[in-house]
Every structure is written in C-alpha cells, then in structure tokens.
Image 1 (tube, rainbow, N blue to C red):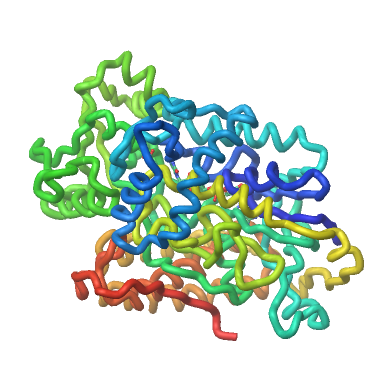
Image 2: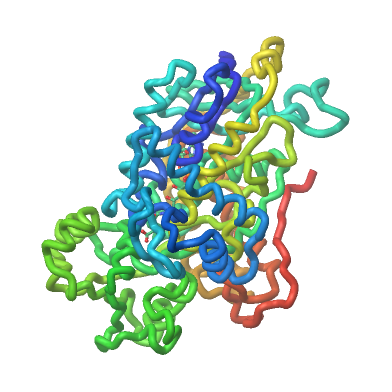
Length: 528
Ligand code: FAD
Ligand code: SIN
C-alpha cells in the first residue's frame, strides 16, 4: 500500500512539530511518530530553552558559553546563527501559545556553563508544556496529518528503489517504509525530514524514554549518509538513583539554585575537580567528577543536597522533581537525593546544515538526530531545545517549488516480506537488548580505554551478525527493528571513539589523555 504527501516528517518532538507548524499551509505534511504525542525527549525536558531575551545578556556571551562548554569544537558560524535566532524562536513559540518564563526579558533559570540566567522555562515541566501545545497546534491545522504508532523502518532512496531517478549519480530520498498496525506501508514524499531524536537506550542507564533508539541516525547511516562525532555521548550528571524509579532526571536547574553534590563522606567534592565553577561546571566535568568519586568510594551513587531550599520553594519551582522523588519516599527539603550519571544526549548525529539539509537530495535531518557542530564536544545545557526549534523553523522555510509534482508519478515497489516468519522466541531479542546495553555501559561509558573499546566492538560485531540474520528472516517487529538500529548506532559510537586519538569534551580516553591541537570531526559512513 502506498501513501503520498508533500513533506514526510518522521518524529513528533520539538524539531518535527516546530517544522510541521512552520511549513507553508500550501503543502501537505504528514508527521509520523512511533509513540503517542506528546512524545520523545522533548516531553521530558525539565530545565528549559536557552535564549537571549534580556538586554543585560548578549549573543556574544551565549556564544562564549557554548564554545567553552563545547571544548573549542563548536562551529562558530552555526552557533552564531542558532543563538541569534533564539528570540525569533521564542516569539514564534509564544504565537503558538507557548510563553515560557523569561520570554519577555525577565530573569530565566540558571544552569551549569551559563554565565547568565537565560534558561527560559515553565517550572521544571518545560518539555511537557512545549510538546503538549505543539501537538495541539498541529492537530488544529488542516494541512497536517499526524499518524501515531507509525514506525519508520528504512528510507526509500533512488539508488535502492528507483534507479532511473538518480540525478547525475547523486542519490535522492523518496520517502520511507513504515510499519503501521502490522503492515509495512510505502510513504512517498517530495521532502523527507528525519526528526527522530537521540539514542539513549544504547546504554543501560539513561534519562531518555524507551523510544530513544537512534532509529533516524541508523536509517540515514544505512542509506549512505555521513554520521559525525558519535563518540560525544553526553551523560547527565544527576539522574535519580533508585531501584523503583529509573530514568528520572534531577534537573541541573536545581544546582542552579544552589544544590550541592556530596560524596559518601558527606564532603562537597566538586572543589577538587573545578573549584571555580563547582556544581555549575559543564556537564562533562561534573559527570566525570561523580564517576571518579563513585570509583574512589566503591559506591554506585553520589548525593545531591537541596536541603537549603524550603518545601514550599521546591514544590512551587520544581514540582516535577519534587513529586518524582517524594513518590519514592525522599523528601528533598530534608534528605539529600541519591544521584548517578546516565546517558542523556547524542551530541553527534547525521551531518546536516542548520536547515537540516544533508548530502542527499530530498532528505533533511533536524534536532537531536542531526549533528550541525553547534554543541562541539559537549552540549551546553538547554541548548538542544533551542537548536531543535531553530532547525525546525529553518528547515520548514527552505522548502520550495511544487513538491506534489515530485511524487505524483512516482512508482516504488512495495516492501517485500520474502519468506519471513514470525518471531517465536522473544528471548532472542530480549537477551541481545540487555547484552548490548551492558556492553555499552561497562565498556563505552564516561571514561574510556582502548582495550575496553576494542572488546566492545568485538562483542557488538557478533551481536550485529545475529540481529542482521533476524532482520532478514523474521517478520518485522518494533523491538527487533529498534534493536537493529541500536546495534548500528552502538557500533558507530565505538568506532568513532576508537578513531578519536585525544581526550576532549565528552570523550575521555585514558590512553590519549590530552587534547589535540587540531579540531577534527570523526565521520563514518557505510561502505558503498
Ligand atoms: P524527540 O523529542 O526525542 O522526538 C523524537 C520523536 O521521533 C518522537 O515522536 C518519537 O516517537 C519519534 N520517533 C523516533 N523514532 C521513530 C521511528 N523509527 N519512526 C517514527 N517515529 C520515530 N534539552 C534542553 O534544551 N533543555 C532541557 O531542559 C532538556 N531536558 C531534558 C531532559 C530529559 C530527561 C531528556 C531526556 C532530554 C532533555 N533535553 C533538554 C534534551 C532535549 O529534550 C532533546 O534533545 C530534544 O527534545 C530532542 O528533540 P527532537 O525533536 O530532536 O527529538
Ligand atoms: C536539565 O534540566 O538538567 C536538562 C537540561 C538539558 O539537558 O539541557
């Protein structure tokens, strides 16, 4: 079965929905989301969106903070463009009913690495507020169709599916094969936009939702696109450490209000690692400090002490965190909160310009799935909602011409099931998921060594062979497709880490502890 649309957006988070809303109403837009909206990491965002809205702040200052956090690897042109579009994004969001605290130039929140209170937020429920409104606004537009529970499996490209359409040898994206209610549908589009978010589920512990399985990055990689700087996986320093509540973030904004990190001995240890910035040092520094203290004391968590704040203040300003931790019996105005770092944000991704354009005609990649160079080697907190929103706007505005004509006469073969059979032993998929995430956590974490990386790659290669065999012989299921994508992404992370012979930002390699003098990107692409 085939469906046609002018623009196909895969992903209904900040990037995908901002793009959908900004596209001219003359175009038909289909938004696919494998999960129900509001969705993705966007829904979980607590801290906020970094933007310069106060006269006392400046683009230069935001740029400097971004560059410092990015350890000198930020692409300055990209950063200038994204940062200077912050106020326009904030105004556009307001127009759609999303007015964040700090939007009108009054004081926003504070986070690590920022030298100004520029984090615009809605209490500590910023992502929920943004994504609910974006979804609602999209549903009210007659040119936008949202399809939930639709899982994009693979991109449809001219080189694989329609050779006569190859343009002077350069490949073209024609849409995607999508699993919907058990059938694989052929979606054809004039422009296809990947906005599928990150890949936190590559790791055993993550702040991400179960849906963050790197699908878009893996799809683009398989289609031959270059994937950049994947060794820079950001670990958020403070996720709740509790057996009954995993994946729960304790926002950095709490440290912005003076919460302190304590070790097992009750000592404020950041003074040994970054005496000037202490708890508000960039994330790579704080996460490594926690990792090092945990190893020193042989414990599996540290403590975040917010007991200087009153119950009333915490309930008023941090309702999400307060209700989350009290639900497991921790009273943050009385007790320090046990915390542990967890995989949080994919700094690398598919190489893309700020409007999402890639090497492939007809394919854009925006938001966390992309890598523009904005974050350098370590993302500054609250810069990703900014990037995702700005990319959404720029991508939407770049669509030109009669997109419908591009798809009217297009004929592409339907998905071939071959002799695939249903999966009869779920344990095959479950076991591989668990091993993959353990390998990544144990061997490819905050501090890396060559030996562990090489071992990880060997294990992942074996896993990849098994997963590939299942892909070709079994009927597609979401779990199995996600596992395949995670395996692809995990191998790219490890291979990128082995390629970077230095320690910089989020990539700390014991065997090469110094930063190199030249700024290089690691770029991987599949062999043709
Ligand atoms: P997402 O919001 O992750 O959306 C991805 C979408 O793609 C979803 O709809 C998903 O269902 C869909 N999808 C994925 N794969 C497929 C597929 N195969 N087929 C169809 N659909 C698919 N950043 C900040 O700037 N400030 C913050 O305060 C902040 N807090 C955060 C807190 C948490 C707990 C987390 C996890 C992240 C936080 N971040 C924050 C990061 C930020 O939220 C994300 O980088 C950003 O929201 C990503 O937006 P996105 O649109 O690229 O992807
Ligand atoms: C947080 O609230 O600490 C997360 C902010 C971010 O990831 O940008």
